Image (cartoon, rainbow, N blue to C red; front, side, top):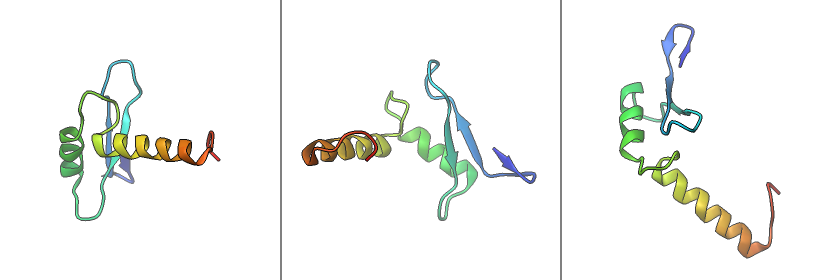
Length: 71
């Protein structure tokens, strides 16, 4: 991914049947290191493991509170 001629991130196709994920730099990371870190966090799912765990925990919390959908 480029903006005004400078690379700002990556589009990474994790699994053949899914859309690519967007990987962008964060605090004190380079474009190369953000890609390397993300690849190391993949465990056979589309989402990197820390994001997958957070998503699962949020869903469990919604169930506990009786909330549905995006509200």
